[in-house]
Amino acid sequence: MATLQPAFFRGVTAVVNACAVTVGPKEGDTADRQKYYQGIKFYDPQIIGNTPEAVECTGVANLLARLRPQLATAAGCHTIFSLTDSGEPVGALWGALDDVVMGGVSESALQYDKMAGEGGLPAALFRGVVSTANSGGFVSVRTKNLAPALDLSAHEGLEVRVRGDGQRYKLIVRTTAAWDALGYTASFDTLAGAWHTVRLPFSSFAPVFRARTVPGAPPLDTSNVASLQLMLSKFEYDGRLNPSFTPGPFTLPLTSIAAYPLDPLPLPRIVHVGSAGVTRPKRPGLDLSRQPPAVRMNDELGGILTWKLRGEDLVRGSGLPFTVVRPCALTEEPVGAPLLFDQGDNITGKIGRAEVARICVAALSSPAAANKTFEVKSTVPFSEPFTVDPNDPPMPCDTEPFFAALQPGITGKELLEEDAAV
Image (cartoon, rainbow, N blue to C red):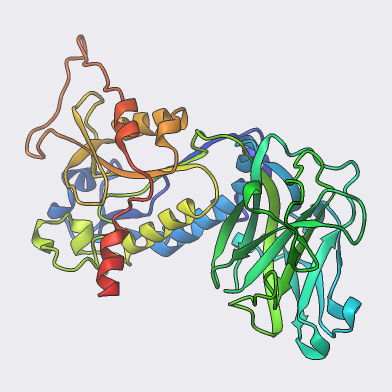
């Protein structure tokens, strides 16, 4: 993280991440890596330098932690609350509002920790002790009235970046400066032990007053957001109980609250180069003899594909518009070979590095590539070198039809999850 200085990313609006762990011959190589380029079947491989975990997972986490606020702004988000690198809060100021107002004994606060965030960066900690004694059962922190009120009418909803504890929380929006007023409330579940972005469309916020819904209340006026409140409560609405509520100590780390835009076709803000084969090492029924060396030797190479998959998961869970490109075996062949795009992590083959670079750049300007994961290879057989006439090079293929045909949510992990469920 120390090398990822904020100054390096000033003005950056999108990123292609193509960093990867180094694999090389155990017996060493020439300065121009001749043995490596002959192919892994001609040498006994090893990881050189940093481990797959450090490069493919921790490194990706650190990059995302550093870039997320800036890329979210580039994607049209309006940040309401965040922290500086030194841990100072930016934006809304918060204070506790707990069930002591009605005779309870719960207590909470929003505290700041310089090392509790992703990659060792700062985080705010909504923490305390919630008790059901004396008919209580809620804790919350609420902003001071925002002056001026926020006009978020150009946005679709609010997003909160949290490290979950498995409980259900509420986010409350008020459109008046009055203290005890109608609030528009949305509940959200958190994933225990995982950083993730919770998105709450404004359409999901229900009018609520003192845990009772208010039929006939006007819709949420997103042009006049006066305050926010974050709550953990025993109660849902209208007498229903929170199904995941657990009394006692709690801590919910968070790093930002922002409004995300009304943009049905976002551009990718991070294009991440992974690898074909990342879901295959543990896939049941797979004939390893027909798989690339990295799949067969995953454990020997420090779990290289396992950590690559975890890095991909971090990108997909970042809350940023993304594209994950999984090339097959990389070669030095030129641009222009016919291509095959696929999903589900099943194909094998080869593709030139320059071709992968061209696909990454194309994805940055294609809404059709946003939030999709895919594999790609040349259709030229491995045994046939692909060459071009420098005086008459072929036209690079148009990637847009390929991007448009891809589906979001397909990663190849579906097969692993199905097997685990059997």
